[in-house]
Length: 189
Image (tube, rainbow, N blue to C red; front, top):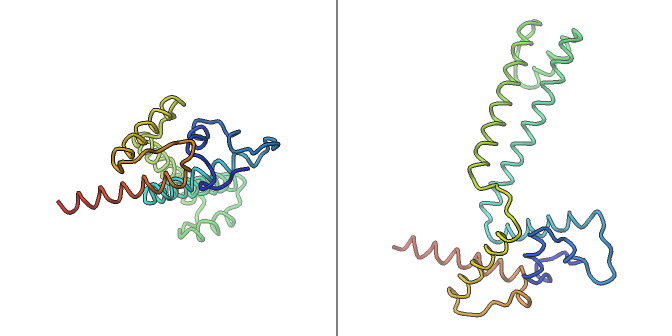
């Protein structure tokens, strides 16, 4: 199975991005559960090269979502414990979270505020990610996007890029290099 960008032709990488994970399989290999993981790893590696700061922001966004989900789960558990009158357990959990509520009613109110805060933050993250272009694109849109990008790089570097022979790793580095050079030129102006 092809598991590095340096061995994956750009045309196969584009197919993989379009959803055809079978291009990663080598002759005689069968599809398995690791195919999706390898595809995700390749896409992540590509994004790290092309847009390191964007990849970092996406990871931080994912981390924030996981933390909020955990906080929501803990708040729901505390609600369940309060309904069972396990106030000592809830007080311990709240204390570990930095709150000092001790009475049953105060703990219920605090847990309610935690739940409301988590829902608000989740909605805010969802709203911001909708506005940042997280829309699923069709395979034709993905191919057209790569075609425009390849055409730009061929014009920029004044060279031919053959997607069948150029690897995804080389292409990602060329794209990153062009981005760095263009931003450098803009800063000098």
